[in-house]
Figure 1 (tube, one colour):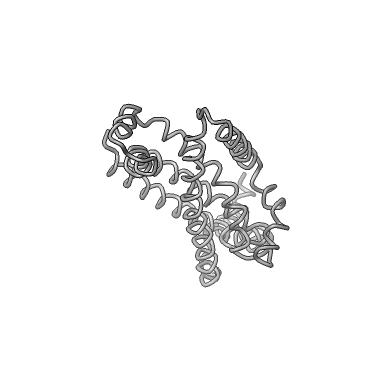
Figure 2 (tube, rainbow, N blue to C red; figure 1 turned 90 degrees about the vertical axis):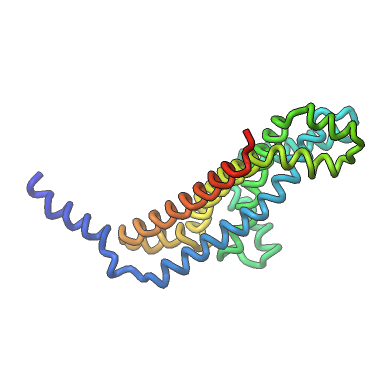
Length: 234
């Protein structure tokens, strides 16, 4: 044990050797991670709400076409949310190259991020809509509210706490996905931790990347919890 102390001390020093870190590169990687996270969260928020509403509205419909539509959308949602993210990135490489003419960089990670998270969030939205009091919906319909008015004035407001809580969970998952996307060329903190941290045996870079990712997650969770506490009427 005594003979290992110098080795342990050296490893400890390597982790906390912040002076040798290129902070400009760290900031650039952080900006890339934030870019991928923010853009994908916004896209997933709106796409997930649309898919969630579609699933909810067609789930018990007596219309044959609505029933078929539900089965098709539900099948696609279940497929995309079941594919492991790292496999989905590879699977979407031809699609990504076709629409972006590139398979590297932060923008190239967006299709996989959106396709993986939107179905997951759509199911959370659908679950939130199921908890809306049926009496409130029936009262609105009895007063002559159109379907759009019911969605805007009943569905969304009544399920908003669940919608916000759902996007918070999804956003945190997306931060983790950006790290995986970075490993195969999307940039960001995941790319920094892997290429400059792991492959170059620089644990200090890996540690800094990890801490920044944790800070981003904590901030997202704090914002989400604060928002939910302000809008939750229960």
